[in-house]
Every structure is written in structure tokens, then in C-alpha cells.
Amino acid sequence: PAWTRVQPLCILKRADRLEECYSLVVIIIRTGRTHQIRVHLKHIGHPSVTDGKYTSQQLYDSDRAWCPRNFLHRHRLTFEDTKGILQEAVAPLPEDLLAVLRGMIAADRHSNEVLEMVRKGWVPKAACE
Figure (cartoon, rainbow, N blue to C red):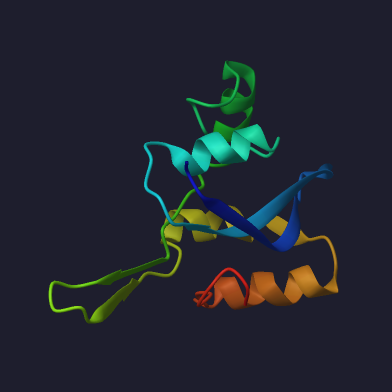
């Protein structure tokens, strides 16, 4: 079976719609099924923003008005190479997703600290950090 771990980092609100809350999360997968992350997020009732496949057309269109693409980013990839040596590739959020975060505000003090770190290029090491 597919294995997915979701770790919330912070709670955010759109500056123009304070009644709507969003979670910025880190996800670890041990399997690699097609659309695994998106399917599991939808299953728990928290689909990714601007997901045209696993949300309604109405929600997709609403999200697309403020987020130009699916808010999903692989920030860390870890694997063993052919010699058994652990390799890692790291990528902070790209500019288009950082621009989306600039339009959001943190729901609390902890969320504000995390949001500022992410905006400065911080990349979590694992879902439990």
C-alpha cells in the first residue's frame, strides 16, 4: 500500500480572505504511486491548492485566481546511489510559490516564525523538524 506522512508546519490565511485557513505541510512518502500525495491530501479533506484533478472545477478556478499552479513542491529528494551512498538534492520554494506566500499572513506566532523562515529559503530536513 501507499505510505504518506503529512506534517503541518504552519497555518496561513489569505490576506484578502481571512476566514479561509491553509496549512503549509511537509510530506514524506516511502512509496511512489502516481498522484499519491494529491490523492492522500484529498482523502483527508485537505487537497493541495490549485489542484485541477482532485478538486471541483469551482474550487480550482477560485484557487487559480490567486495561485498560478498546483502548490506542490519537492524540496528534498534522498536516495541511495548504485554504490549504496546516500545522496540528497535540495531545492527551496521557487519564486512563483514564494509570491503566493507573500500574499498570505500567519494565523499565529509559531506560524509567523515558520513562514518567515520559508520566505528566506529554509528547507526542512524531515517531516518531524
